[in-house]
Image (cartoon, rainbow, N blue to C red; front, side):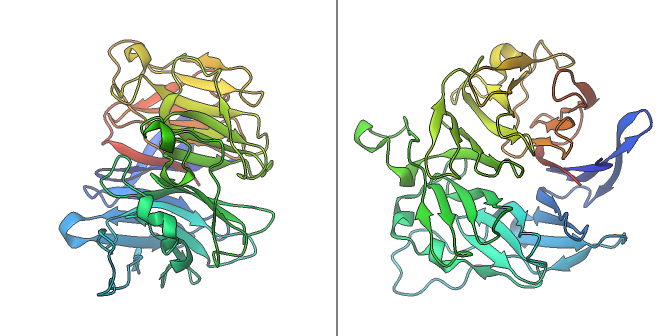
Amino acid sequence: MHARAYLSTRKGLFELQRASAGWEIGPSHFLGEPVSIALADPRDGALYAALNLGHFGVKLHRKDAGSEVWTEIAAPAYPPKPEYSTDKIEWKNRLIWSLEAGGADQPGVLWAGTLPGGLFRSNDRGASWELVRSLWDVPQRAEWFGGGYDVPGIHSICVDPRNSDHVLVGVSCGGVWRTEDGGASWTISATGMRADYMPPELNENEAVQDPHRIVRSNGDPDVLWCQHHNGIWRSGDNGHHWTEITRAPLSNFGFAVAVHPRDGGTAWFAPAEADQRRIPVGAAMAVTRTHDGGNSFKVTNVGLPQQHCYDLVYRHGLAVADDGATLLMASTSGGVWMSDNAGDSWHTLSTTMPPVYAACFA
């Protein structure tokens, strides 16, 4: 059972601790500094925190298991852009948008997704990083563009627990990509998705899809869920094909999705009204949940604010623990809610946190 969770916020990394009376907010780290994402590595207990310090650049820190000391480690850095390059994007790390541990058989391997769309790999627990040029150099990258930011970004990294060389990533806006050889080569894998923001003749172009967030059920690893800009999609064949889910109540627009760690048919979403109105539907906070692969849904809102609520849940703002029953949700307005019964009801931990970028369990 998880005893800790972390909130990456605009003003620091905040630790949540399980107490006898429930969850409570504990120590803070990097107070006052923007923490874009954190990773609790289940292989060795290390905790990583990515900071976005503006003028001072992107920084990365690690705290080893049993230690209270943070150590600054290398941050992913792009190589110099070749003089002959016609790439209009600056080769500079603007943000670490995602961090993921490699497989259990790959001690030390970390993956990082960044703006402007580069995937990085470390083989030594972040002491050094290398841009995955095989993905950076795909011809389709010329079609990628910003979704939410003004440049493309990699926000989702899904390592297959059956084979650590099989990795799937989500790009906004650049579609879904997968490798089956540890990153040596990549295949675009967004078949079935639709981009209504594009001209009709381009809306099925896999290289311009905007998957807001992609998650894998580790105990049912062929199943992946995607909250897309234009709806909800599910894959039952490890991302090779995607099927649109059309029965979601309230709204099919949103950013966050979480999947049960063992049951690929169970997933949770935090719907918003629309792209043009990024607030909870009817200004009432709710989570939608399916138990049957998207054939039916339940709206769960017990304990969530139901009037004058304008909180938005970012891509990484909804997390589920390994027990499949404990959920953590946090918003851009500083709301933090916890559920211990798979989302049937929620209780408020805070309404005054800084804007939350990401939530995770340790």
